[in-house]
Image (cartoon, rainbow, N blue to C red; front, side):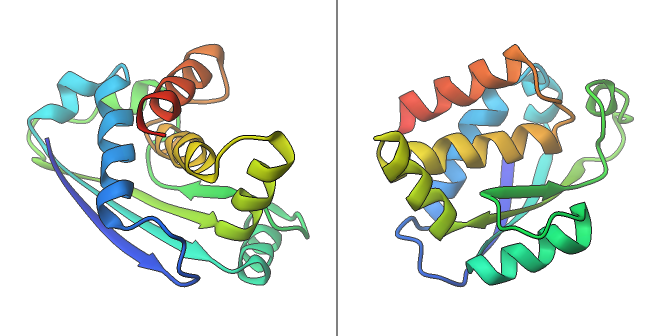
Length: 151
């Protein structure tokens, strides 16, 4: 798989593009669609926002006036969507993931885990949503596996 990530770190989260790429790559290779995506170029945007910016986005997109750890949005809604992509397009643009570093860091502290583990878990979660996964045990298993492997 050829992975191309546009990365904008507006708050200087201490993890660079290489870490983000590793998390996304391992998540995709662990998902049920790895074989389908392996021969394609996968595009993805990741931005790390300040708390007040994430709150604005969450209010606008989800009608929730609070910050959150991750928001993802893309075109593949539902597990069958990646499977149904015709073989012809060699490029798949999964969409965009927004992360809130302060929320992630604070959540890690509250849970007694490392910030790196939480970043892996949350970014994997957003990636899986872009791959069409909904909240389910398979999704959580992949997230936990990715976080354990890369943290």
